[in-house]
Length: 380
Image (tube, rainbow, N blue to C red; front, side, top):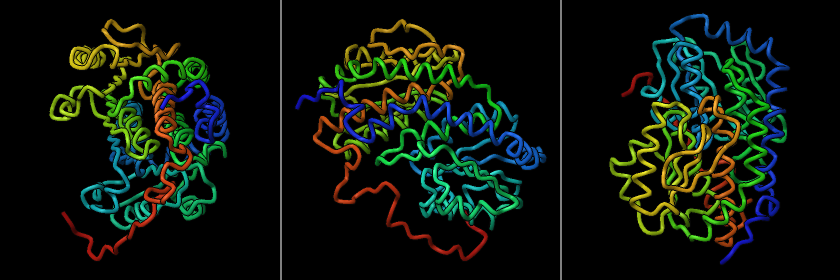
């Protein structure tokens, strides 16, 4: 079926939430700046011990925020920063948490009502030698925000209400929480430049997406290196969520893709490669883009580029004005491309993007999770 893609961003709540992101980023910057003094005091105390480890935790899309921002945070703080899904913290806490060192647990939560979010905080309290909590959430009334809001060892940063997506998939919440984290820890980010870039992407994304949807892809591959691996993972998840799994999607690191996942390629595949702004890393992204162009055809390979026109036989989608931004920052306007592609694919499949699972098989806030009691403090 042919979808009139030029109307997708205005077709539903999810499209509106994709399109509002540049405005939300400006508002997020204002929220962080407004709490700058209290936030700096909390972080200075939490990170006073040089042995303190920063653990970035969330589930699903929220876990990919950690993947995206871990690299620039580690460089900024000159200490260990790890991204660990809350699902790992809950299911294997002794393996996921550094129990013998002080921990700053940064919890990402759109709603703050998923059972894993609360359980991860409780397990960190129980198992780590010393822990403080930074909660970055879009919902002031969520269970996580309420539980941590009155604690002396916790800081709750609530983002603007618009970031709390009403649609099924996380869009504004993903980019809003990622930006808030970079700003909170003092990573150099030009927010206005990102917002302008996001507006430019929105202005031209729908015709580009229409050309890809016209190819009727049944598989989507997203690849990126370093921080952009987290972007690739989130891009693939958006497609899986909004198409209810009808279009198979994989996210991976550019170099790792050759080690088995490349077997997913077939004649109905479209591949998207995010090109790093780092010159050294970018060379590896370009290598896989050229390899994919030879394997499935240049018209089925898209390179998303923030540094300049890429010398590669593929469709080039440019994110303008972000050549000097870190990969984790320019990923925010870049994800607009993947979000819009997933939205258009969902509509093309005859689904409702705001609720692609009307039978309740998958839910906006995860259901069916049983938190089992931890009966011993030792484990593998």
